[in-house]
Amino acid sequence: MRYSRLAETYEKIESTTKRLEMTDYLVELLKETPKEIIDKVVYLTQGKIYPDFVGLEIGVAEKLAIKAIARAAGKREKEIEEDLKTSGDIGETAQKFMAKKAQATLFQQPLTVEKVYQTLEKMAKTVGAGSMDMKLSLLAGLLTAATSKEAKYLIRTVTGNLRLGIADMTVLDALAIAYGGGKESRCYIERAYNISSDLGKVAKILVEKGLEGIKRFEVSIGKPIRPMLAERLSTPEEILEKLGGKCIAEYKYDGERIQTHKDGEKITLFSRRLENISDQYPDAIQLIRQSVKAQTAILEAECVAIDPDTGEMLPFQELMHRRRKYGIAKAMEEYPIALYFFDLLYLNGKDLTLQPYPVRRRNLEAVIQQTERIRIAEYIITDNPEELEKFFLKAIEEGCEGLLCKSIAGDSIYQAGARGWQWIKYKRDYKSEMTDTVDLVVVGAFHGRGRRAGTYGALLLAAYDSEEDSFKTVCKCGSGFTDEDLEKLPKKMKKHQILKKHPRVISTIEADVWFEPKQVIEVIGAEITLSPVHTCALNIIREGSGLAIRFPRFTGNYRPDKAAEDATTVKEIIEMYQRQLKKFE
Ligand code: ATP
Image (tube, rainbow, N blue to C red; front, side, top):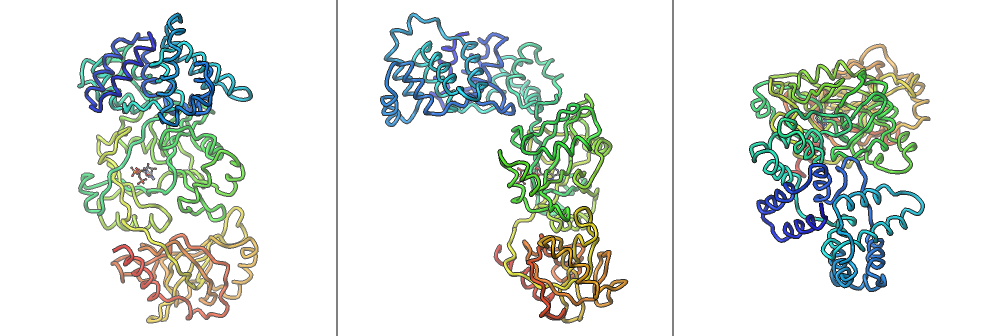
């Protein structure tokens, strides 16, 4: 097939803004395309040579393109640069200069799609020393054989500027019309795309095996599945009603979504945008290898940064330190992660995407051996709005964004690539910052593990209730302590240690060690939130809830100058909470 046929179609598509006309032009082109190269034509019309998840780009910078045009046109680079300044479009500049050379081109063999594709593929795969020269000569060779119109589109393609405005959905429409027997077949073709993210492959199966082949299309390892997404509602009542009165509510972890493909020992990780991010997370790969007991599997998880000392979840921003190409080993140590799995889409050769969620989750629980850093998403199954609200507050307090409430009905399949009502997120409308530090009383402690064995993992802290003359818990704090602090803490606290909870301490949490309320420390948190477990301000703002400090951190200041009764009071915490809310009214 001649490349000029593609260039003509591109020109027509560019001349319209109407989606229906674009689709028609595409249908004509696809109908004329030989079976063997339909995938290549589909990739090329999207300005690519592979689906995105392969991560191979043709990668020609503007500078190199200018050199190639100059070489093919027999002009100086300066001239090309000057022209580009006025045209602003490197494709047009290429067209203009190659038109001047038209004479010579007349005697050339016409450029074929196969030849263009092969050459672009070679360019994409050329790496290392001398690769620039190689790319230059390949591109100049193509331009020399091209007509001026072809040159325009070739240059736009290699520089990543072929923006025809053809969305994936338009290609699906065109395929349905050209080979599926009409638009009605679109849903099958779309599903095949949603579970493979590979338009070229879908086109090829459709052309070679017909609609029947597409209907039999299954999930395969190595091809990322387009993610299922959630709608949003703002009250537990609405959520339960929408989900048929009962649902599974899971923590909505605040990290990065990762789709894991396991094929024996080979593990590939894809981001939410379906890029291959395996290189960023060698630690995740190692953890998955140890914990996922399946030969082949596709699983979904949220990857969250954790405090290496306490295992507590850290805010999303901390995970962003892991977004890097270099220094990965160091980042892995400084910002360790945990994975919270929430779906299983494929298991030992079987596509599970059409199974209801309870079935997928059962299989997920059977396949994952949970460890401290590989977990299954925390959940409850409930039909009670109050229980849902309590679970929501607990999720927030522990560092999550809120809840994901999911359908457990018979039709709760995995809707790849769709945002639907099977999943409903429940988040807060506001997020606020805590600007002041607070002085809190140490009333209990929890034993540390791992690096913290022999000392405390976290302290249970309380505010002073001056009306009742008691101490009400407001957070568990394990962050901000230096190694030296940790070493000294058990000794420092020894003199205050008592055998059971002090009568003036009001707590629903069971600490491992209890203290007499004496030691005051300074703490800063991210914000104050409603809490289903802490007793500070219990039932004051809302029935059944107290207040808690989210992401608390020891500032390094012990306050020996303060008595426990001089600590921040419950009343002050309530005022801080209300001030925060005011900002968002
Ligand atoms: P958001 O900003 O809310 O994350 P989004 O468009 O990326 O928006 P949503 O559909 O709103 O995605 O929410 C689903 C996202 O929540 C998933 O992409 C995933 O990254 C994350 N997530 C965290 N915990 C879970 C869970 N238990 N189940 C499903 N998704 C979860």
